Image (cartoon, rainbow, N blue to C red):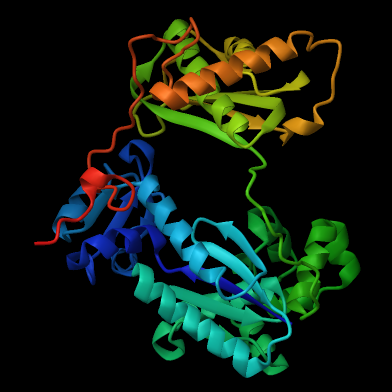
Length: 420
């Protein structure tokens, strides 16, 4: 049995290049919501020293000087191409775990080593031919080692042709000696600091630690990771992993906001958006968090970030209930002497709607559910957010700042390529 991690190379940039081949070989960056900061880079952009998370306004001069191609994030396009890539992968093996928009784990069970290697190389060729997206594949006896193998396949693509297999103990030891502990999938920033205190620098240093130390300082999850890196499988394919563990709606404002009423309107709108996402996956939440933040890039001003989290008296996916609790939290953290550039709401403690636990506090649950179904039905028929809560701005239509947005080549009939 072998696991493989299939990872799309520089996925967002590759999606843009599929329909604009003149971008091949040129530096490309993709910006976050509201064109705020860099969230994806081509290899050429990385070589220019553009870091992940770079504020776009700070690097504007570098972009212009080096003719960096800058794009707003087009998640409609990226999501559609991702679905196409994942559907191709599922043609080859039944056990597929879609790990993220550009990554998937697969499991080869009952295949010989030659058959497994041949299938991996065929997947790379087919995805590139059918979608134009280059991918790298790492193959190993565990999921964690497959992640390590994928890094090697991608880093040394000229030698590996995008495919690398850790199929011997010698390869496993060599790979772990050459990867830093902080680059190992599952270590995380906090655990990296703990490991540095005991002079653990490489993956090999990590697996040489006593099991008791790892379990005590990194919990059972850390111990499972150690076993995985030793070649002992502890993680299996998680089929049907689609529902989120939390749902967040956050936005930066066009200009600073200091009015409580304006913030209430924004938090209410974010609550409605997040609640709709919650209902779309047939889930409920029992915990919410609200935050407001000042502009971190504004000179000569005090930086502030306030957040508050509370557990709800009952699980719900009602826009009315969630916005009500969110506004209460906002009022507790708001200060009239400050201005804010960003706010958001995070829904946590998600559970399936079908397993709702009734309590004395949710007496109107049936009415709320019927009302939400009616609102969703109207939105689906006439367009999003036709029905709004009274505390929302009835004239305002929230649109992100996306001045460099590419076309939706695969999802909008009016924006498909025209071939002459």
